[in-house]
Image 1 (cartoon, helix red, strand yellow):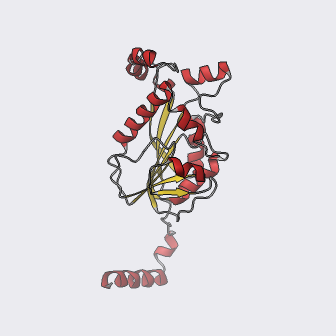
Image 2 (cartoon, one colour):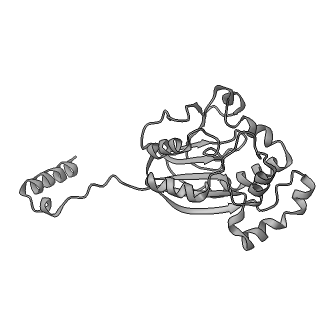
Image 3 (cartoon, one colour):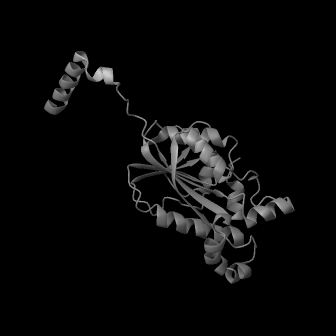
Length: 246
């Protein structure tokens, strides 16, 4: 079963449709000028995170054969949640939209994402905020907002995971401050809460967006003793001469 099958049903509701538009707008505005050669995305089939991005090679990853039938994109790759069939250090931009809260082993998937990112490659994580009005209603009513999405991962936990995987968080933003009312009329009436929430309770948005960069750990430091080694000097000069002549 695809982890986003229930998402596709929920997005047809008034609240789900509104959230889809909010997230699509954020992705369009913030990913347009991210450059590189390869970009990957995982998320609900109706959300095209890379729509405005200018990278030529853009691929969507699905976790089940059923999902392929719902995605209107020829550049779709079927993969497992634990192992991505992508060569290490080849991806410039990776977008995860509501993925880590839906898969069985989110830390393993994040580890795979780190593996395929190039040094200084960019990772975007979008997820539900467990400290929000939406989370309060979810906990009080004991009802999942989206069927199958039980665990909402906090930003604090994501920061710990990223730190362990040598991913540096460089930006973040909250959005979606209105109450989780599944009514088009009330969603329109309460639009003012978006600007008010961003000003008065900025960390209580229903959705967060995190931006992380993979640290460049490819540099090997040379100890002071090797700096003065004749063998090291000879090897270095020979290497430089080969690079320049080549």
